[in-house]
Amino acid sequence: MTSVEDKCLSFVKKHFAVITYCVLTLIILGLYIQTGMHFDLSSPPLTDFNSYIKPWWNQIVSEGGFRSLAHPIGDYASSYQTLMAWMTTWGLTCQGAVKLVGGITNFVLAFAVAAFTYKVKSEKKLSSFALPFLVTLILPSVFIESMIWGQCDPLYALFMFISFYLIYIDKWGWGFFVYGISLSFKLEPIFFLPFIIMLYVLEHKHSILNLGWTLLGFYLPNIVGLLHGRPFMSPFKALVGQTQEYKFLSMHAINFPQLFMTNGNGEEIEYGMVSTLLIVMTICILAFVLLFLLKEKYDIRSNFVQLLTWCIWTCYFFLPAMHERYDFMVGLLLMVLTCLNIRYLPLFVGVITLNMIIYTNSFFNTISNFQPYAWLMFILYMFMTYIVIKHPEKYGIIKK
Image (cartoon, rainbow, N blue to C red; front, side, top):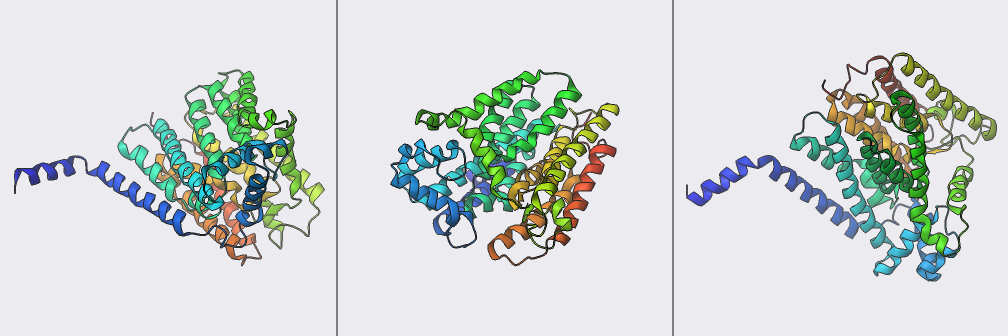
């Protein structure tokens, strides 16, 4: 063996883990590039790209890009319309721009998820960062949302995880500011609010007035729309309008309403009264658990991620008018928990498997009865509830 060969082999042995993770990242990057170049977002006929994103893009282009911000196009806030208006200036097609933003967002999201996991994990090893980074990129929900559906869920999730990180290290002002940015794109980050209240009540550490930074973060991405003449309250009206758009108890989500429905959206059930009942039920469950945790003197700092996951999962599982992709954050947080403690693997695998089944149905619409899947999700949710309430130490994520 020559000296050059000996040095190369020694280098590989010394840095084998780093080289492996880099190679895996390049392989995943190649998958994203191939999908971006060859997959046609308009080929699945039931996706939002055909029904919403492409028509919005065409209208923004026809109205002069940023000049279109003078009035709403689509049902999202002006922050999303501003992003699309900027994307039309890149010289790309609608598909090309959406895929580029989706791919970049996924990699930045993976970095944010990995940074949060690494911060929480007691053992600071390379794998503590690399594993959540790589797994996030290949999660079916993350990949499909951006590269197959062209949706912006990873975008709001990115700011959510930055917010988690900042609040976890007690940077509440900055955390709520970034939380506001997340809310400016989608309404789903509202699921984080119950955890904020619990953290405030259980920890007695920060002022709730820090929530004021949320307004600043919320309005910052909408400022271009306001400068083009939008009313000051238009961002809020856009979010409230989203809650009134669909009068279905469940939009193919596998959650509590599906346990009692014979089709995918609950058309046979009167929406108004039942939806109010579900909202009240959700609030009562959250309040009851908070009172229980107060009585038990719950260590929220040691169980930060567990309680965070449970709160978001509770909102998704019980609230009405949930879409199938609204459990996006649940899958990501269960992945984080699994990286922190392998005991969460059954929960993570169960939820991701159900996601794959329901996401596949979104393309082909072959499932007419969601009850069996809803019962499976109910079992998984109750197991998570059991962990949070009865055995947080057994499934702990921080070594003391």
